[in-house]
Length: 333
Image (cartoon, rainbow, N blue to C red; front, side, top):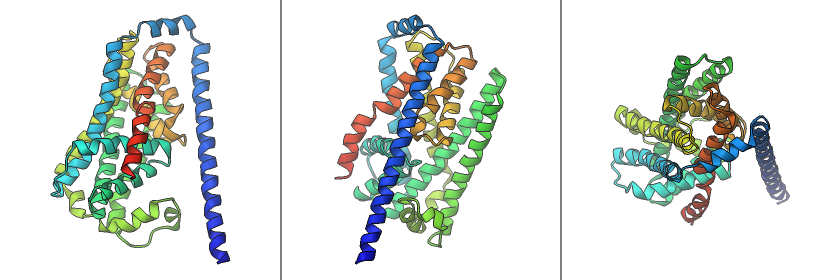
């Protein structure tokens, strides 16, 4: 009895420590973002900021609101395609709210995407989809995501090399990211082949991972061997990168900056890579700093680059959290 109480006490202590650390990281991330804004405003003319805000075109803002909405449809289409290949008929539109709720889960509990992953599997299972098929959807989605991300990274580096001298730090980020993307994609398939064999203790100590790893052996392998399915899901995941990057392009148009998409796209992808590799949840501050830095390489003024980036993050990160909270609660009922 005393051992049970000690164990419960240890669990409470671990949860408290985890929450404290997460809040501390959020706090320093917000401080970093505030520091970035102060830095740019210090070296820029406040009058130019005011001019940018005065000339914002509402129609472009409406377009900036609508484009990220399509990304949720693309994410849902990845799961829908996997279900279709598994012979399960399921409405695409009914999966769209789940994609918004998953985004909130990733944002509210930044654990490298693990919180959203567990949420996705649990929600699909509540909708009557068998757990093995839920795990297959998860693995196809994850592999397709990193493959699309890898292609986006290689394409962006090629564009930067063509338009601009590549700084050493961008090359270093790209190399590290490519290694990570290939390792995750290959590791996902390796875990499936490993089935229910024993896993390293380090993996099993990560919250939620042990449940997923122990169940991976039940995931139907035939879905992971379909080239047609992977091509479709990679294209759908790649569409999300294109839409988010074009949203940044539209935000630049909204403040009167006529910038080529071939410049904006690599700026967005490099910023995303830095945010993904960094320890900061959601890339808060690191994404904004990198995006502004890369855009400024193409002679876009700092204040314009920062304004457009903050508008992008407002539409793609902060605004969806409100409906995401409601939808996540509804999914968990």
